[in-house]
Length: 369
Image (tube, rainbow, N blue to C red; front, side):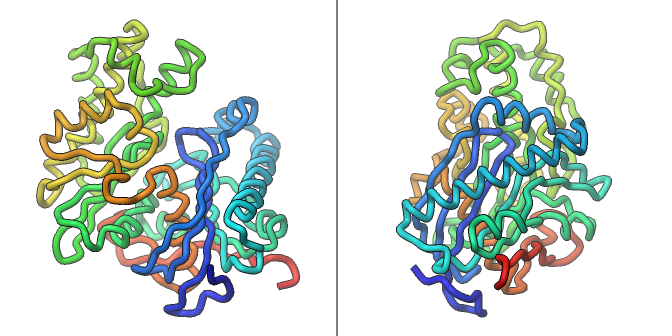
């Protein structure tokens, strides 16, 4: 793979790192790319967070922890990402000098674009020093400062990957939050967060069983959807708002489901995710001919079946078109890092609602370079 400088139009090797709202762990991916339509996927790995660190990170969500506590969690988070890079380099047979840049998303603690605020922790300078590779982070800040939603931030990468696929097409990422990329004919792109992804389901299962998620959707499959609770959840004004739009992980209160049993609660919250995706259909210029699903939610068979029923068209995991759903977000931030260094837009009016195509990212060269 080619490393070196990120000159305009040249293909370079980049690493992308993603810590998503599901709090699973770190996704790390290598790609070769020019930051436009040339993308070759390389090695990929996921490193799950240890339970103790996951709990500490969860305790910082919403900005509720002390500054000292957040600083300590940020240090641990950055060091864990450095370890992910070291393991990925070994797996890929690469040295730091062969990698042009690392795209380091960090972890979102708070997302409130209506206040022009989005907060991702992760020390780009420390990561650059630990890895001896240049780092780009703070991808969302410029977009939010300019009046955009700051999310979702992967749609332009979806567009690059899907250049040869039939349209209109929808790519649905089901992480902690659900987000949608709609790709129309003639290069049209529209995006936004649909509603909850796995977060409410995961939190429900954790609170009731101590397990991190509903594996395969088995609990939901054993339960019954409570229609009254589902209607209450779907009454949120958010669903009628036009795209683009975005959410914080904890934007929805699951309290209406509090009186349900374990399986019925899992079934109802799973139906809420599927129904919130379907609620986006009237907001799209044309209904998609096909939906491709990425993120952890594609492993939930009950959720995938509910989506197919409500959307009424073909719903497939992204592997059906040769993409890696586990690697996709990590790859996207590698691609975005290369775009950042080349001065190309990371977001558009149709993806985040920003007034004009907007650049972003903050650059951290390794020490002495």
